[in-house]
Image: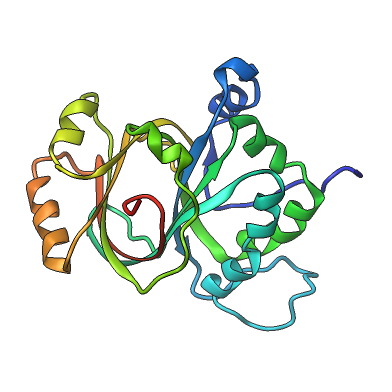
Length: 238
């Protein structure tokens, strides 16, 4: 395989130290990792000069063109959650879409960055994304590792909470019934390192608002609470 084109972007700060950690795990210390993507799009995609794209499209449409599902399948990874953000209730920034990819190993996530087919598709992501945060997680319930990719279904409401906290146990206990993910690192973002990510299926936007209110004592910049409409969900649905 020829050398891949360098991947360039302006949508986040890479934690090179954590990237090295991901790349150097010995097999006995490696295993599945969940990449939780928080995405904010440009209103109009920002393609580089000389790009073959000859139409003006939105950032969301550019990300749809990026869609690396086929490549992920080749390396044993799978998209296990996709949702549009319907409400940004707590947090200094707003987000447009959430996606979670489960990689079979940390090494496979790093290896994908050097694939030519991925580099070619990445042009669309770089053009569409205004900013992104990718929180790398392990589930509290290890049974999640064997849960298959579900079939798409009608949109369902899900509350999502992302926190910086030294007390992960208390954060998990604060939302009974949630699917809890422990953050191992934040590979790309704005420099903040997140500690927990939680998802819980709810019946209405009002329930998301109640969760947001219950976390009102968190310091500014230390929590996101979002209401999602999930179209693919192997996280809260078994």
